[in-house]
Structure formats: structure tokens, C-alpha cells
Image 1: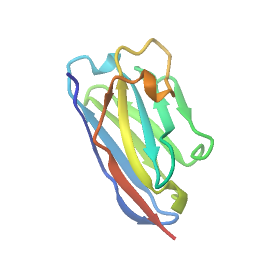
Image 2: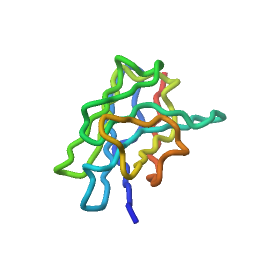
Image 3: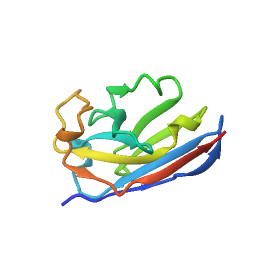
Image 4: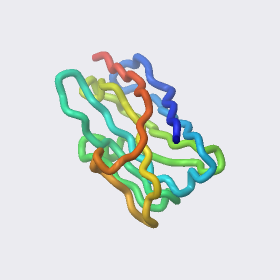
Amino acid sequence: QVQLVESGGGLVQAGGSLRLSCAASGRTFSSYAMGWFRQGPGKEREAVAAISRTGGTTYYAGSVKGRFTISRDNAKNTVYLQMNSLKPEDTAVYYCAARIPGFRGTYYTDAETYDYWGQGTQVTVSS
């Protein structure tokens, strides 16, 4: 069983920044493909960013490209989401997810392909 624990959410003004962290349990984190998803009020869950198991391949949703950066530190079993130039429409609960194993060089954007999920962290951007 893999546990994922997100942190770093909060309230920020438009134009501000936040960095989300997701700490994973397990001894083979380097085999996990990771993703960040979000679900805003009255909206469906959507993939925000994803990263391959080594970090060499990444994906960004069009709405966040150029503002968000996904990264990972396999030595710390942690994946990050740096969020800059935040907008009110970024307000959502953000979830990290792990797919085990992830194939080399592959990221995943379909939530159904992920095996484990964190509890979520709230991000609220005020205008």
C-alpha cells in the first residue's frame, strides 16, 4: 500500500505563487509515474501536470502551461508542483496520484490509470 500526503495549499492573491508537495511512501518511488489533478467547485477533475518516473518527460494542461512546473526528487520520495501567476480559476482541491509502475519516459493524464491518490490540498486564489 502506498500513501501519498500533499501539503502546501492555502489562500493566495491572484498573481501569487504556491508550491505543493506530495510525499510518497514506499521504497521504489523511482518506479512511480506521478500526476497532479485538481477539481474546482462544480467542475470535473482534470489533469494539471504529470511526470515520468525519472522526471525526464512532463505534461501540462494548456491552462497552466508556462505558469506551473512539476518536478520530483526521487531521493526524497517527493513530487512538487510550483504554481506561479495564480489566477482565481486555479482555485480547486489539488490531488497527487501515483501509477505503479510507470513505464520509462511515459507520463499519464487519465485519472483511471492511477493506482493511489492523496487526500487533496485546497488552493484558493482570491481576485
